[in-house]
Length: 133
Image (cartoon, rainbow, N blue to C red; front, side, top):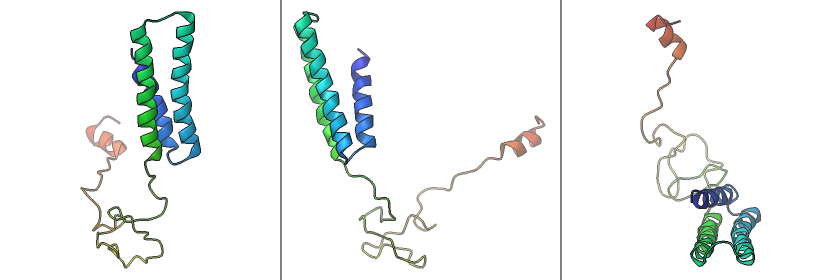
């Protein structure tokens, strides 16, 4: 039974990696069609009961439906943009610290960063101080 969610996760991961592309849409369609083909093959061979075949059909609908939602979700722009309104920030010099459209602080400035800066640990120095090295 672990194969059902694992298969769905693989199809959705491919859809997420290729969202907003034809390759992503084809991957989701191929993933759903593969389940339908498996269901039909099991029917022809007389394997699996009606309940199992119904589960496979439901799996195909869920994988395809959620996969298409993922494929149609927008990609993050590759250029600097405002994280709030999406305004294109290309061409602005470093003196502009806020988005000209909505006034949100830019994320690439200290004023716009959220949270504390990451703590960097020097493991070699820590090992020397502890007497391990």
